[in-house]
Image (cartoon, rainbow, N blue to C red):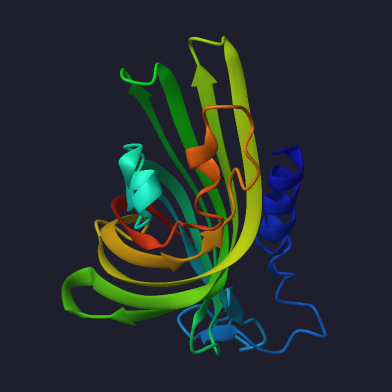
Length: 237
């Protein structure tokens, strides 16, 4: 996970290093300024300039649910996962779309009384893509998006009878599309919802960890594809 957090920090570096105002008197800066004619010296030699930042974006925090299509995972009761997410998009004035960089973590845990074991499933996702934001009246905005995801999955089985734990992990590349909308409660606050579909297959427990767990290896690939939906709140910058 330390490598994942470091990767997220590197992805956020463009936000930290985004262009800033260098001052109206910089000889190399001759655009993105508007002249204010309201304030002038008597000899018209003084002009007031206002800096216009060409960069804008959003950072939102999501809570929702992820549905998984795989029958084996559904039989374990792990097909509905609680999801938390961080949604980031940035855009320069001349770009037709925003660059999207999102992070999701989904988790579910179930206990089987018949088999006396607890199964835990965790799915972490680092998503890259584009997001087209369409502005409407009344501060309402809709969006469409799509891209690729680095999907990291882990499953843990805690056997109460044998007092042992079995864990397997896999990482794969998936593809996603999304749609949604949000309203601006003020110049800085967003409140909205989104629906998203992820297409990805992973291999968990392709080798039988112990006697009695042969059912884990019956299906080499686990289909973690499914619909994710949730609500989010955040800020515009």
